[in-house]
Image 1 (cartoon, rainbow, N blue to C red):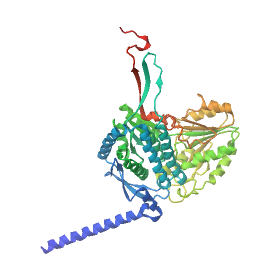
Image 2: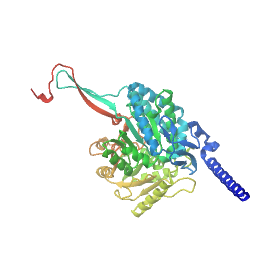
Image 3: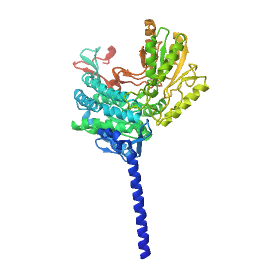
Image 4: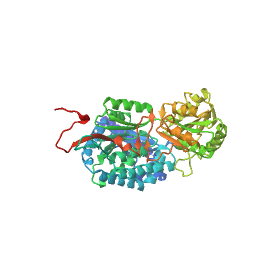
Amino acid sequence: MQRCLTLTFARHSRLLLRNKFASVQQSAAMSSLLINQPKYSWLKELGLSEDNPGVYNGSWGGSGEVITSYCPANNEPIARVTQATMAEYEETVQKTKEAWKMWADIPAPKRGEIVRQIGDALRKKINVLGSLVSLEMGKIYVEGVGEVQEYVDVCDYAVGLSRMIGGPMLPSERPGHALIEQWNPVGLVGIITAFNFPVAVYGWNNAIALTCGNVCLWKGAPTTSLTSVAVTKIVAEVLEKNNLPGAICSMTCGGADIGTAMAKDERVNLVSFTGSTHVGKMVAMTVQERFGRNLLELGGNNAIIAFEDADLNLVVPSAVFAAVGTAGQRCTTTRRLMLHESVHDAVVERLTKAYKQVRIGDPWDSTTLYGPLHTKQAVDQYLAAIEKAKQQGGTVVCGGKVMDRPGNYVEPTIITGLAHDAPIVHTETFVPILYVLNFKTEEEAFAWNNEVQQGLSSSIFTKDMGRVFRWLGPKGSDCGIVNVNIPTSGAEIGGAFGGEKHTGGGRESGSDSWKQYMRRSTCTINYSKDLPLAQGIKFE
């Protein structure tokens, strides 16, 4: 008996020690999170905590894998998010489809009023949410705030759109008949976004889709899950204040399993995917197998072309902004700079000096112009691309090294001497490497612009108006964004955003992009007492 008691006591003591050790480990892990440091206490203004639920469908939940979000500027953990299980995904889709029944019955201008309130709610949190984007994604603070501003601007645009959506009344060839176009929402829009614009891309889709009468299911990038949670909290509060189902704007944080489920799910009427061409192709094929709709925003291998008459005072800052901004991690980043042989050396010299003056530092420092890459894997891709460029005949004239400091910092890099069709030049590497090419003729430059697989953004610098209109015309740029005397990046929300070829063909944001989120019916109404047939056919 005594021996039994001794063993029981020993086991109990070991259990207490294990529990105490586990408690100490947990406390240490919690204290090491940035969210618990006074410097980052502002994160709690967004409703974030050490552990955050990664599922929202009118109520918060999440019982899947727990992931930790890291700050790219120092690789320190920020906080944790619990992702969705497949069962929670299924529950969320069901609730979202049910919410659509109410949302679709609300008149479009009333839906626009809800979108207006979402924009106002974002305005109130624009600085703190922009700070989170900077902290978690790694882009500089002003770009983080600017990204939230894009969501706000699209909300404003969508409010006006809510009173303008509609199709035409067309002339009918038959007496006593009316021919009209009727536009209706597709239903459930699945939105899969990338790490580099964790707020804006969701905003482009969400604001327009809601106004059109759709409900939304969002899966953000796993590495920016905190931003997904924070944005959803802001949107959910607006819906709940208006006594609307929160599932109108649902969220399931997760990895490829959730994305694949969305692509395969026939209940998801439109899948909007932003990401790599490789993954986008798989999404497109999966959605097409079920004859679903997709909206793809994929890669870009964008070029600036500077002709002999270009204003170099515009060319140099444009190239720096478009190649260095967001550390080369925009889909519209300039990756190829084509310079006429008469200005090549002068531009390279000025560009190199400008690169050396770029202020590198913590992204949330207001004086910083250039922050880190998003992940350590991106640093490896940067080094691999530079090595391949050297092997293929390129010369590094600026940068080319990993920086000796905490975080994922690399030097913005300029490489000259490569052939226009070198394999590395035709490869989109999501890092700040600019390939400078030397051309002789307009025909050559236009052809080089178009020879890559992607067709997102492009720009020429010239004063020749004839050349401008040739560039805009059928034998000019084959991209979805075709600019003159401005960079390839920094698009406004009023125009349709998207590209051709391997960029995917989708269009988001302004112009008539709203049509992507709706289905069109051609309706013929006979208000006469006769039954004439089209094309004059007699069937008597």
